[in-house]
Amino acid sequence: MMSAADRVRLLIVTCITLFMAMLDNLVIGVALPSIQASFHAGMSDLQWFMNAYTLAFAVLLIPFSALGERFGRKRMFLTGVVLFTLGSLASALSDSSLQLTLARALQGIGAAAIMPISLTLVNAAFPPEKRAAAIGIWSGISGLGLSVGPLVGGAIIEGAPWEAIFWVNVPIGVLAVLFGMRWLKESKGERKPIDPLGIALLGAGLFGLIFGMVRGNDEGWGSFSVWGPIAGGVLLLLAFYGWERSRKQPFVQFKHFRERNYSAYLSAGFWLNAGIFGAIFLLTLFLQQAQGYSALGAGVREMVWTACTMVAAPLAGLFVGKFGSKRVLLFGMLLQVLALIGIALVIIREGAVFPFGYIVPLMMAAGAGMGFSFTPLSHGLLSSVAEKAAGEASGMSNTARELGGVFGVAIGGLVFASGSAIATPNDFGHHLVPSLFVFAAMIAVGVLSVAFLARNDRKTAEAGSPSGAELSS
Image (tube, rainbow, N blue to C red; front, side, top):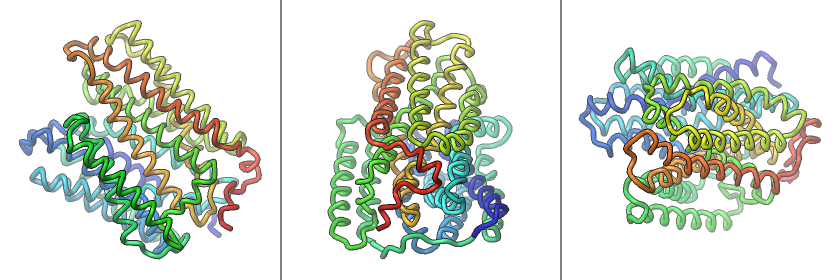
């Protein structure tokens, strides 16, 4: 049994490392012009600097979760930290576009181990009555890392060369490994036999889906280079499903999908990330290209959003224990739906150029909604399965969310790009409004899936026991 001090140390190590990994999802965005000038890189190179990380990260989330359950969560978590740190070092030392792309992929591989296993470590370390609060802190750090990436990148780029955004990770990674070796305790989950064919089918299927979606708006959705990988990915995932159904000990336990809460929270995670990260992507461009703020200026203003996320996520952990995951999640998602619709209505009424203060309350509501959503999503999903299956559930949750984010950016970008050319700030606003309504509709689909599928787990939260324990039989 871990002591309170051990749990605090575990939370420090996992959250600092998680923040570092999530930060690098978006931190490179503001550095792309500097990198382009340094390498004389083309647009395809710039896209791969971003997509190499995303692809490696999304494809390997589930495999790393399973490896952590079999070979040890501490061992695989620290392996991920080492890989991410080496990827950061290689990125900083890169002197060509190809080297930077490969280094970013290595970062993504490391992050794929850090993200799900850190959640599993936190879930296993805390007793049920304190678990929601701990996951709230974890969720707040995760959301903060994603959201402040552009701000941190902009602040570094204004005073240092682009390599600095990667150098800063190296000492953090080294310290995380040293403290992790000392403070983390080894634990394992459900020991499943290694399934090379299943891992290959799953990885290739997810790769095809994501590869096609991230290229759709640039290559054209009717292009074979887009729909071909997507169709191939779907076929490979169907083959993975058939293969797993034939195994006595499958790599992915599809029986979990019969638990209503499990399916509801996975669906909600997909649609929530589709709506909210698509909106963040376009609103960041809106602040810079339509309202004229610098990258740093836009990042500072987005702190209105992210600061509320950081505050609301730990509070959500407390509310989950009192009201249950379902009610807190519905509240958080509805806040985001209303906030996005509100921002769209402001643009319709005022045009694209207006004082930033007009949308401050709406951005605060969206940020608070994110905080009130991330915590019950993670807690509700993990509570729907037996503790020995927590690693798999964490991997599935993060994969669904990552797929949702890629889907949201792709579809939102498609809606945004349709219609006439964008020549003025008001043109930008006219294109943004329908995208915001689409993003709100995506989150609303998640609201409906939770409202009609998920069971209220207030009694479970008060009792401090997982609601899905029956799946362990």
